[in-house]
Image (tube, rainbow, N blue to C red):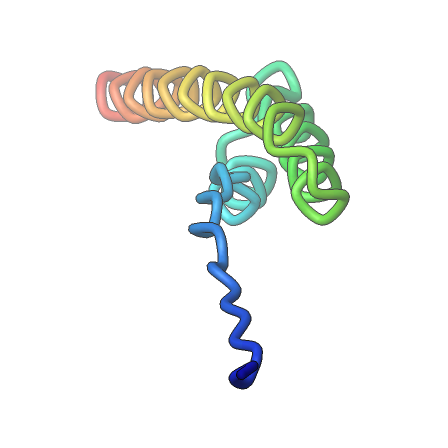
Length: 92
């Protein structure tokens, strides 16, 4: 009269984790660090990684975006400063 009980479990799709840009921030901290933007970006990258470990994707995304913007600013200012330095050395 009664058959075996069948249960099924559907695993939800994994939520993609936002990037934390730790390596880029570390590179900017060592090589392109005008106005300490690379170091500040590294701090926000570590906070993004901590939020990712704590299963808070919205907080990780916020910190990750801030780290990305700081990294872009640090890299652009570092490249401009390098070019100006090369031009000054060549002209004098």
